[in-house]
Structure formats: structure tokens, C-alpha cells
Image 1 (cartoon, rainbow, N blue to C red):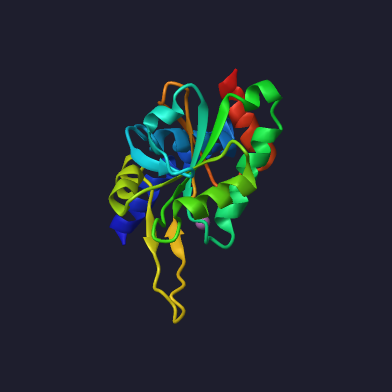
Image 2 (cartoon, helix red, strand yellow):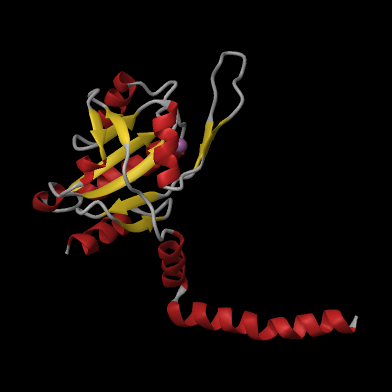
Length: 200
Ligand code: NI
């Protein structure tokens, strides 16, 4: 009993410190610090196929502020929502800034997301959106570099399946280096703000 009480008393300063930090920084900034800290080294080289069937590498990111999102075209809700937010956020920027931003959608479901499927899908969201697919190995390598998780769930009787996947958006700078992680479900205005701040 005494040990438990000692441990509990020991926790008081820790909890108080965390509370103080959240009060001082505000919950948004506290989340931001966690987001920045999680993504120390993200991204890097890749070899994929774009939605036009061209072989591309990380060179396509150079010169643009790129927003990268991993998902799949058969996703019923999360992917369309995030991609729509991404597209609308870009369109709230002045045209000169829009030209400096590049939205990228990377499929985690190459079995169904062929070049043709991907082409139609990205065009429905934004004229500047690039779709990336590839072999299972190429996609696995890109997922690893970006620390993205995904897992195809069991097929139903019709062969249909969902894919469980992480839903962060990566903001990459014009030099190809990772800038920041945008958490899921930002509003259009919040996402536009985060991009605008980076565009300077
Ligand atoms: Ni999805």
C-alpha cells in the first residue's frame, strides 16, 4: 500500500508539469510540437509510376511545396474527405501561390489502383494533383520512407476489401525535404494557413 501511495505521490509533479505545459502552450501548440517531433526524418528517394504512366522519382517534388497523402481510390470516406480538403485549401490561395503547390496522392492499393484508375481519380479532385502507383515493392519502399502504415483487410465474398491506413499529410519543401506533418481532419482554412505560412 505504501509503495502504491509513494508512486502516486511521485506522479503528482509529472501530471502538474504536463498540465502546466498544456496551459502555457495551448493544446494546439502542444499537438504541433508532438507532430514536429514525430517526423524527424521522413521521405527520401522513390521510384514510382505517375497517373499518366510515366516513371517518376522524388525529383518531381523539387521546386514545389508538396502535400503528400497516402490512401486508395476505393476508400469510402477518409481519403475523399482529406483529398477534398487538400484541393480546396490549395484553391483558397492566390493563383501565383497555387502554381507553387503540388498535391500528391500515393496509393497503398496497387492491386486495384492502376494508372488508369488513378488518373480518373486524381483529376476529380484537382487539376494539379499527381497520382502515384507502382509495384508492391515500390510502394512498400515509399511507405517505409514516409513511415506510413497500411494493411489490406479480408476480402468479402465479392472479392471487395477495405484498406486500413494512416491518414497524415506530409508537407515537403521545394528542396525535397520534409517540412511538417499535417494531422488528419484539419479544416480547409487550417490547412491553407499551414501551407501559406510555409510559402512565405
Ligand atoms: Ni482512406
